[in-house]
Every structure is written in C-alpha cells, then in structure tokens.
Length: 261
Image (tube, rainbow, N blue to C red; front, side, top):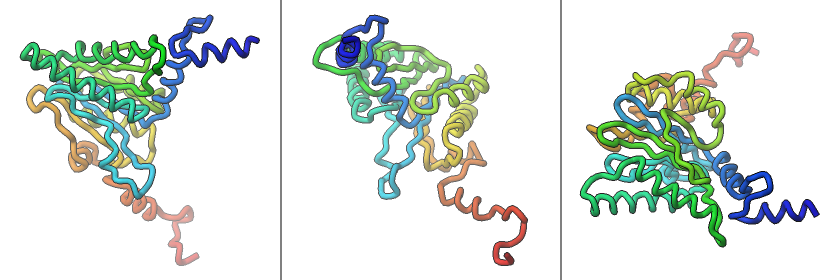
C-alpha cells in the first residue's frame, strides 16, 4: 500500500509528498544535471557566458547546437537540460524584453526579466495538466551600468550569482569557480576561468567544443570566436585534430622510436 501511495505522489506534478517534496521538480533537475554544462561568470567589466557544445556525431553540424542566446543588446542567456524546453523559456524572455522596451521605453532590468521567467516556470509546478520545465537558465547582462548574473532552475527559484554552473559536472566546476573567482577579474580573466572550469568536466576540451559570449556596457552582446578563445587561452587546442596530433607526437614509454622495436 505504501508503494502505491509513493507512486501517487511521484506522478502528480503539483502534489507534495509527506516529506515536503515535489518529485516531478526533482526529476526536472535531474534532466538538467544530465545536460552539457554552461558557466556564467560576473567580472568587473561585464558578464561571461560559456557552454559546452560538443556534437554527439561527426555528421552533426556544430553550428546547430545553440547553448547561448541573445535576448537583447544588453542581456543574454545560457541553457542546460532539454533543448526544446529551454527554447520556450528563451522565447518568453525575448518577448518580455521587447514588451518592456515598448511599454516603458527602456531596456528591461536583469532581475526583473529573471523573475518574469521564473514566475512562469513556477506556475508549471502547481498547475494540473502540465509538467515542470526540464531546463535551467543563466541570465546575465548589464543593468544600470553594472553586470548582474542570475540562475533559474526548474523549481522557479531565482538566485543571483557571482559565478555559477548549470548542467553536468556541477560539483567539480563550481569548486573551480569558487577557488578562482575574485572581484577584480577582467573580461579576459573571466573567459580564461570559464575555460579552466569547463576543463574540469572534459580533459580533451578544445576551442571548437566551446561557445562563449560576453556582455559589456560598451559592446553589448558579443560572440567570442575560436581564434579569440585560443588567444586568451593559448594552451587550449583549436580542435580535436590538434589533440590527436599532440598524442601522436608523444614518445613511447621507453623513448625509442616505434619503427625500431
């Protein structure tokens, strides 16, 4: 009988279990944790958003994997989890930025935008016939000349961060961010820290595996090219072929040429 009761709470999207949990929200968080990681870092000059965008097949076009999205000239988002769910939330956020511009004649505040999105997310945890969004967002941008960074998870809870990660490998990546983040980080330092943190998730990380964007007051939203990434982090290979070449160049354990064996 206890098992049947457990299944009833498990299936209900808007029911609390006796210990105060909503299982469907926890399942949505698990969906996020299985997605490739995305990192957000607040620096003294602006916001850095970085995401893993590695293809699952050599036949897949890397450009079709979108993890970073411009919402307006001063604000952008990074996603993790179910791509289709994230797209719906991104469309909602873009619509709100335009509504705010038309209604008030000014760019939407980063906190205001985040709370609008998280209010919508939270509604799906208490309405019948719906399910929680299986996606999380990092929303970062410039508000009144100051960089601000927020996270939105499937429960609809907004938190402001100095640096954070969503997706797989959270424990290792967040630990790296906590150890290396400082108030005085420059934009280039932020890019380097993002690459270093994501390197904790993938040892064979290359510039081609990354999508990085910055948001500053002077330049607004700007995508960082692969060439610019390797300029900031010279030790980072440009692509997988470079990693393979480095491995081929490594000497054998006995330091003798293979042809002499």
